[in-house]
Image (cartoon, rainbow, N blue to C red; front, top):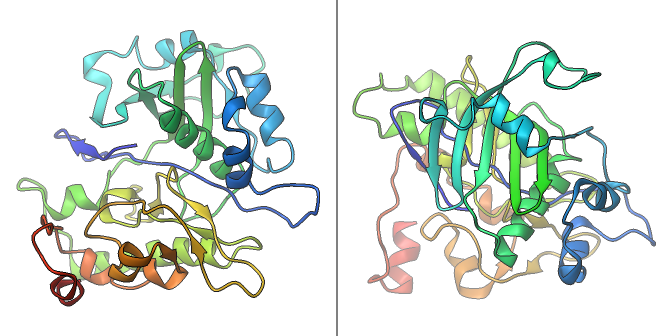
Length: 295
């Protein structure tokens, strides 16, 4: 899932996943399950719910693609909030007449993230990871997943609407009023609380893509982490780290992680205040020592 770009609207959405759940000798973690069931990725809501049954704590709505078209006025251009490598994000509304028996506050503003024809294996896995993780995790500083669509080739996620967009859109906009330092500190504290919740969960989660474009803001500048597509189960028991394929955004990841692939929770816990006002530049020409110094 790629970054969203800012399109004049302060909303800037990016959300992904992997989940935490209670220990059980018979139940695999969400990321373990997606890895071991690669050849069995779900193709319809029934199969998605079958994967979620052991970990689902948050009820999710399985929308049809026709319902999504009604919610977004047939994905009209004036509903477009932004886009990126994964596809596009549209503003939509859920109303009670959308479906008989739908229990939801009316009308409810949502952000609809449509995967832009990316039916690649990795794209499907990241979509599924988000459904599983955000279908289980719940915290004031994590974005809320309302539902999804898994119909034919359509892979869509429906989130709560975050009216002030991403932190990145505020930091680097030439037209928006700069954030005050008190608001920046509030945002940093909220993001840190969200990260701490993931790290201290019964089964820890390593986020792996902690940056300002993935921190969304509500109308009161409360920060919520989004885009859990690259997240992974963290170390448990006596383990100090998990070894993974290098993932995330170059320049934001800690140098020791880039060099070793050892995912430590501490790697994504430091530097949040620095990242609040720094845009990562291309560093491919720098030596390892220079990258450490710069980071």
